[in-house]
Length: 402
Ligand code: ADP
Ligand code: MG
Image (cartoon, rainbow, N blue to C red):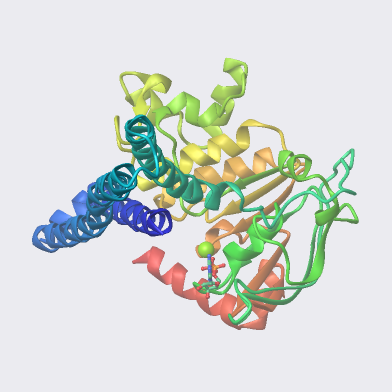
């Protein structure tokens, strides 16, 4: 009975503890926002609530563990009392000899401590088991997107990507983020994807390296369903630049090479292509500059260029760029676009951007609207159609001239 109760309460105590540390982690990570919005008091309250919850759960646990030992001692002593009274009576009434009686009491004393120790061990085991359950809850999760037994390495990968009536929804009861997408991107061409926010551009890109799996239809790479190609093999041939740049703690150089050894000459070319060369030279420590929480905090645009350089470093045949110029100024943007065009001669490139300047040179442009392709064609064709693309283009040109 005690074991079960303790297990349950240890679990809630540990949950309360992790909630509390999460509140601390979050408010440290967002410290600037907290300060900028004068949210110090609310954050303190939040932490105070979480701490109180932790204390409350601990008190509940203590009620059990606190009662456990006294009850055990009580049981032992009650049993001794029973032996004294009942055994004593038997001895007096000559049922057993005094020797038997003394021996019995001694046995009982010998047993009492090991029994209590077992209780103590049971307590420890419950605490450990509660922790283990929480760890196992994570360790036993099977990735939804994984290799199947028939997965193979499809060599060589040229890079022809085909979407065949692809639909995708993030959850079973969510409306689809992508609906009936059919498109082709071939090596040596650049495909541009434009569309308002939330139209499914990022989702579309993420389907190619299987960060999600399609709900309907299929995506093929050189005619083979991507779900049949071994995951690591598939991803080795795709370089994906995410919309939200993420840097790991460490040096700038480590973040760009990402564990690869490259010649310095090559690295230099890549840095120039990503319009990062001069920025890095302006840091006293150059590529050895520590970035992240313990070092220089890069601007959004700088981060974006770092992850672009990371993607350009290896010669993968497929390049997926999610808004690579979203956070850089117009001048840098045109340098980056120029570099991407140079680098991507025989690659399959898909560029997502809400700035049409980034895609207007593309061989083919798709406009997405609420997960569907609303327009497609070259820049010229789309301008002639005079729909979303043409309207946005006029607007952005107007903005640039301002
Ligand atoms: P875009 O990149 O064009 O701005 P996204 O592909 O990011 O659009 O999002 C398309 C739609 O899918 C949006 O409605 C968005 O709310 C939804 N969405 C995006 N990511 C997720 C997610 N991880 N879980 C649930 N819904 C998501
Ligand atoms: Mg997006």
